[in-house]
Length: 105
Image (cartoon, rainbow, N blue to C red; front, side, top):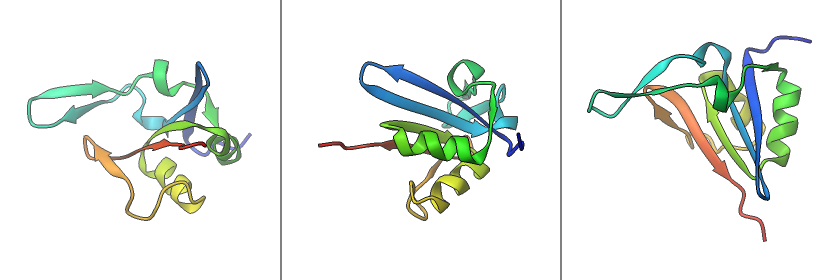
């Protein structure tokens, strides 16, 4: 399996298929939140530890009802695949971040 530098975990919460993915090197890092001095830890409990290929991540994003994405590579892949509009991501502690919610009818 090629190592594209992504980690991912899928959470199933009731009817939701939640995909949490980030650039692998972010796991364990603490990122600043605002100017209060508070931080958020990028946890393997949420984002996972298992490295996945770009194909696995894209497969999961196609099925996700909610996605939480963090990191330059993950966001670039999601944008290239049309899941995020160009310029549609924000940042968390200076790291590119996006949340996607499917509005199903």
